[in-house]
Image (cartoon, rainbow, N blue to C red; front, side, top):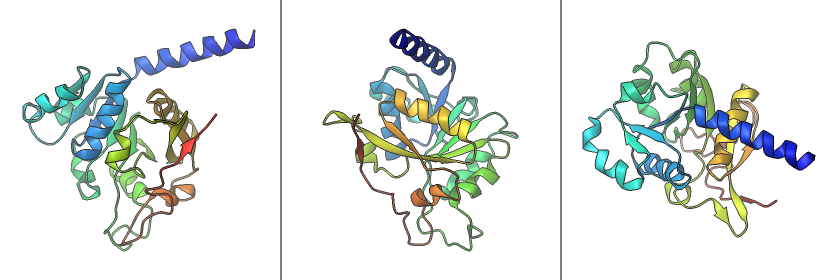
Length: 218
């Protein structure tokens, strides 16, 4: 009975994830590494930059047939959006929509080199959240280098960990479910200004968990 219930729950979760749409804004090393994670799991994802999508459509298609180059205006129609641009460029992306209500932004940026004063002495993800008014922001996937992120998260029988932080636990759980679909093991750190500080940077200081390549075993 328990096994049947678990199977039913897994099916329901998979159906819900299939109904959601995903996009990656930014097609540098991190953006391409994230795109490969979707391609490995045969999941459709839009990729976009501020450039004409024709400029990188061939590179997107080379990663996988379900990695689709789109305009920024079209890509931000997705339900869950990975922000994989330079931190300094986040406001440019935020201007792509007048209102971000109902959107989930996964903040993959790093504000290393940005002064605490410029951040208003706040976590960088909260600065991002202010720019994306109405959206729910989850800090995550940013502690891994592109070289690690693009690899299979299956490691010696375990799964590579991704850290997530958000002020909305329900939203964090949705991104956690997506991380699991991509093969990762999500670890929830709590709020952006609590555990989230462990994966955020400022000035010339990295959060204590950034660059930590950890694996979770069952």
